[in-house]
Length: 468
Image (cartoon, rainbow, N blue to C red):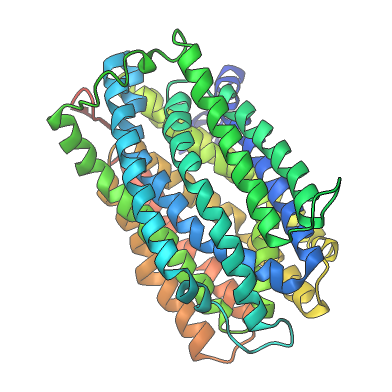
C-alpha cells in the first residue's frame, strides 16, 4: 500500500474528527475529572498515612471487579442498544434498557453477598512482608472500615450505569458527563471535610473518604435518572419503560448469547487484574502503595485513549446497525490511529514527569522510587495498551463476543497472569524488571488485534442479520 493510500486510510477529514470528538470529549472530561479527583483522594488519604492509602487501594481493587462485571454485563446489551438506535428502533432500545436494569440488580445482590461475607480474607490476600514500608495489621483494619461504608454505594452505581450507558449509546453523552462532574465536585469537597474534619465535622479518615464517594454516587444517580424521566423527547426509550419489564425471549437469548461472554470476560479480566496485582503485592507493602500511586497517575493520563475506545463501540455500532460496512471499516482504522498517536504523546509526558508525581504523596522514599519506575514503564506501554483497547471495542461492536472474550480475558489468564506469578513469586528479579516484562508482553496481543481487525471478522449487523 502506498503512503498516499495509508494516509487516506488512517487520517480522516475535519467532519470525521468533529463527530468523533463530540462523542469522546464528554467521556474524556468526565473520566479525566473522575481520575483527577481520585488522585486528590489518594493524596488526602495518603496524607493521613501510608497504611490508610494502601488499605483503600486494596479495597478499590476488589470493588473494581464488581464495577467491571456491571460494565461487561451492560456491554452485551449495549451492543444491541447502539445498533437498534442506528436502525431507529426505539422499542428495541427500550427492551435492552429493561434487560440492563434487571441485570445490574442481579449483579448488585451477588456483589453484596460476596463482599459482606468475604471482605476480610480478600483484603488479607494483598498483605505480605517484604519491604521496609507499612504495618500489615493496620492496613487490614483500615481496608475493612473503608469497605463497610463503600458497600452502600453499589446500588446507585449500578442504576446510574444502566441509565447512563443507554443515554450514551443513543447519542446523549453530555448529560452523563454533567452528572459525573457534579458528583466529582461534591466528592472532592466532602473528602476535604470528612477525611480531615473541617467546619465542625469530626475527622473520619478512610471512612470519611468512603462516605464522600457514596454520597456523590447517589447525587450522580439522581441527576441522571431525574433528567431521563423529564426529557422524554431526547430519551424516548424511557416512555413506558416500567409499564412492564417484558423483554422478548428471542432478544434475551441473543443478548445472553453475545452478552454473556462480555460479562464473563469482564469478571475474569477484572479478577485477573486483581490476581496480577496480588502477585506483585507479594514483594511487600511498598509495592502495593507504589502501584496505587502509579495506577492513579496513569488513569489520569490514559483518559484520551480510554474514551476513544468507548467511542469506537458507539460509532462503529451505529454504522454497523445502519449497514454502512465500508464506512465502519474506514472509521475503525482512523479512530485507532488517532488513539495510538494520542497515547504515545501522553505516555511521553508520563515518562518525562514521572519523578515529580510521587512527591505529592506523604509516603516513604522507598515507595516514591518504585512508583517513579512504574509510571515510566506504563508511559512507554501506553501505545500498546491503546491499540489493544480499541481492538477490544471494535470486536465487541460487531457482536463477536466470544472472540472478544478470548482476545481479552483469555490472553490475560493464559499469558499475563502466569507470567506475573512466575516472575513475581518464582524469581528474585528486581520488581521493576518483572513489572516491565508483564506490561510489554501485550505487544503480542496488539499483533493479534491487528490481524483480526484487518480480516474484518467484526463486521456484522446483529439487529438486521447482515454481514459483510
